[in-house]
Image (cartoon, rainbow, N blue to C red; front, side, top):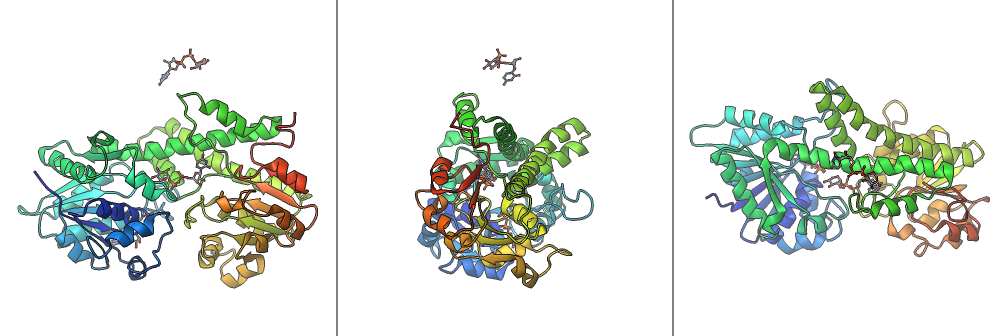
Length: 472
Ligand code: UDX
Ligand code: UDX
Ligand code: ADP
């Protein structure tokens, strides 16, 4: 029976960092070393100011850092010491070449795998943790086997991560399930059992699911595609609601009461973002196309098309409401992260919206409680369009509070559902007083009580509701 005593995690990002920190926290008998090529990232993990904002993460890291949890840039030493290695590197969508805009770029996975093959001096269990297209484990296996010797055997497992940002620590401490896929060979199953034993340090055994390698890889893409599909479904309905007077909250509530549907993930919004949904659906679309299943590809592609439509629709509504022009008008954008409780901006709807506002020559004032100004400038730069911070500074202003952003603004646009933007937390009377009149407010997150804000004087527009909703 293989017992894991020493774990290495390659990649200290949003997935590798929190996942392995919780693993160390719950397994004092296991030494966990998280490595990354980025010296700055590792320095931050070793400081008081961790590189990722995630509720509860500080407590977990500070409780075990220096005891059984280590952060290092010495990738080779950590690989050599470990019995089990998580590969948790980034897998962005390819920007050029075959499959550009669709397929995942596996260059980082490949280079981490090659490194393991080159420096390993003893047998290893190598665990695919990054979200990757189906059959990546097979490529990793081919690389490792081509480099293994009679003494050094590699087993490959797929152990996709299901944590959501903003609730990562909660999700990791109490997961709905842990999924571990392995080749159904004797040694594959032994490796699978070894990883099951690691998780059962804190996860009830019945929640640890074991499958074959391909089921595990496909389940991750499938789960994310179906979650995103629910959001595109409710967003498609939100357009019908606005056109008819049905209220999307009421529709979602009524549908969600059906236990076959369930109530979660039915919140209409300005569009889903994050590093996973779009990327994973595009992976699924690419896979379907490659498997010569065009109808399946088109079916999943539609989820992304609907998401883009939702963002465009929101912008169009803002422009038409502001008398068909936002040129030189000041738009206050509240929230830049792709959801609340994270500083992550990958694929955030805010980026698309603000780029459209800039194209229309509006002045945009942005406030987000957790996103750094530098990150905002980087996300809004576009080679060939708006290259530099200097150019951007003409159009955008980054603010320290919602009040500063809204000051003298023509419109306030709620893009991220941060609690501090709720109408019982933010002083909307004060916001209203500082704005140009009429003072427009667009709620892309169903966050505020529109009736209450209308009483203050705001002209309110909410996703999935028209002014008649609730009054007729
Ligand atoms: C997602 C999956 O939930 C997680 O299981 C997987 O491991 C990684 O991808 P994440 O992207 O971190 O997690 O956040 P999630 O909570 O799923 O939200 C994704 C996007 O959908 C956000 O922009 C969020 O605002 C949006 N969303 C979510 C909605 O618009 N409506 C909803 O009802 C739920
Ligand atoms: C449906 C709705 O369930 C019900 O709430 C509504 O009032 C009427 O329409 P019904 O058509 O009677 O009810 O049966 P349902 O159990 O929903 O099945 C519909 C079809 O879907 C059947 O052909 C069933 O075999 C199929 N189905 C259902 C699947 O193929 N897979 C499933 O997981 C569930
Ligand atoms: P995710 O959201 O999937 O965790 P991130 O981009 O946040 O993605 O993190 C991935 C991390 O992996 C980055 O910090 C990157 O520097 C690191 N990384 C990529 N390739 C390698 C490699 N070959 N060795 C070590 N670290 C790597």
